[in-house]
Length: 432
Ligand code: HEM
Image 1 (tube, rainbow, N blue to C red):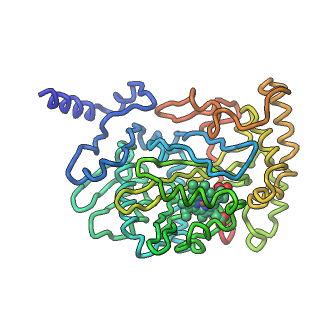
Image 2: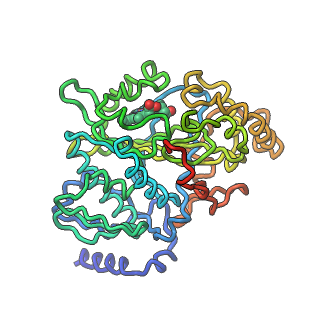
Image 3: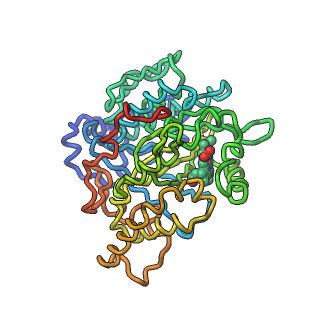
């Protein structure tokens, strides 16, 4: 009887208009049963996967929503796994760039095909499980952005932001990774353990936004050691701990990490910093004539989780751009950036092409550092080291808004400012 009462209340709550729901101030970790998570026999199996709580933003609000502000800058800077426990709510994030990223995914897939999207037959089941997991995650986490239209032999879902209907009824008309790329803005890597040698290798990838240093065609089917062979200090610092960690990773223990580099654009497939003379002959000139204020840090925000049925490891990567300018009043950020650009580990400086840009940014960073002293944001005694709120901005805990996300309080930041405003696909270099 009591349960029936709760059910009536619950359905009543769902019937409230969104305007009414909006007027209630929701705490950050607000948990209620999402409308699509009523327990059925079919999704019983996925009970073991942690479920996200709903974030009640509307398609209109997405255009103004900022995600968590990443500041993954460390000093001293050593190559380490640097992984953190992932709050499952943030597996697949939403922000004002969502529509642009989804459009770009499609354009890049149509134009570059296997260079960015590829899969091996033995990875199909894992990709299918990934598609189901992403679908359920989006329905649970963003109930106003994804609508379940039909649930029978496979789901039919409407993406309310792009207005696209994703017909995943069986038999599927497209590869599961294509559906995934129409729901989430992240890049996806699907990794399986090879039963013959017990090592992990890449069986499928939907990676339209590698940033420029590699193409997926050179990684598919390869073991993680080969994939990481160009990564600085991989053998000495990462290899052993990564393989050990992959072997014991559990389904409900997802993690996240972030890496970063600097560039003077916000392209997704190939960034200027990784461009080559063949496609941009005047690269140096273009770089030097760009105002340092227009330089961005590209954060590569990554997650890792294991799927229960296939046991595949899913690695996601998602670029987010922050201008150095918008971080200028955050304690120590300009100082740490300058320090890394000139005194970071040699091989990392090379891998990230820091030597190419650092002299152009040097005066600008010095000015920002001076400004921090003048405004007493830092003083002579402030230690130059990783900041307490790493890997996020210092203001992240206090400035969360359920409907607008995280808001940078700095004057130099405008919520309306979109780094992709100037995006013009006609002007992209021939490799992008
Ligand atoms: C704990 C797990 C992992 C760690 C610590 C790690 C670490 C790294 C690091 C340090 C880099 C260099 C760029 C940077 O500074 O971040 C890198 C690059 C890369 N990682 Fe990983 N990685 C992990 C898992 C994976 C997985 C599961 C895949 C999936 C195949 C993957 C694919 C790549 C690729 C494609 C690159 C670019 C390599 C290149 O430049 O050619 N990583 N990784």
